[in-house]
Length: 126
Length: 131
Image 1 (cartoon, each protein chain N blue to C red):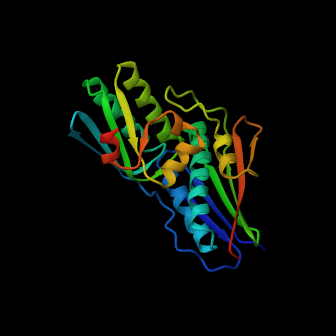
Image 2: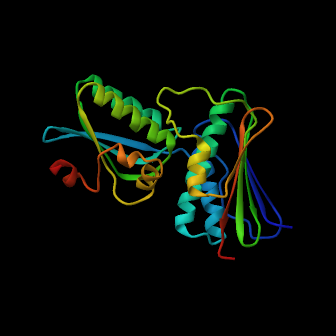
């Protein structure tokens, strides 16, 4: 059975730092390069930002799952809500684009509720 | 909040409760510039404080602003949104806004998003003041 780590986050902005710390801790344990750790922290933060904005006030938890596939760790962030509310100062950069710029093979898919699920992999030294 | 682990590797030491992030903002005057020093991590949780501070500065009439990101260890699109909003507000009042951002994660985010072409970015405060 592959190692699998899960973190359930309440949909609150303060949770995002925890998601980054959790992801970086697991990635460093599995020997990911430090540059990759910085990139995955950003990707996780972006994915969680969208998920939390989507679910804030609805009490639906955001799920961060990290799976060890032997030569790579796969990160997935799943929300379950509808589109994020408009933000006057929000960047006109779709979340998927920034994550794909960091991880070209990242999958960003709409879920049935209209939210987004994000999945990407990072090589390990194992 | 909960964390779970399955299967056989050693259990990683991780405290699965909230890890509050501090964002420290300090303002000082250098020559005819207002320098806003930012320390910490800028994300969805902390970016409102940055946004509000810049709005305050602009409303006080300080429209020559240098945002010093040298001590920022992490910046995501929420932080970029605050900076873009700041640039827009300063420009609307005929002012100038520059960033101090050396090599590192924040500069990478600015580059990936193409914002390095929108913001004047300098690697040190001295370089910004000489620009």
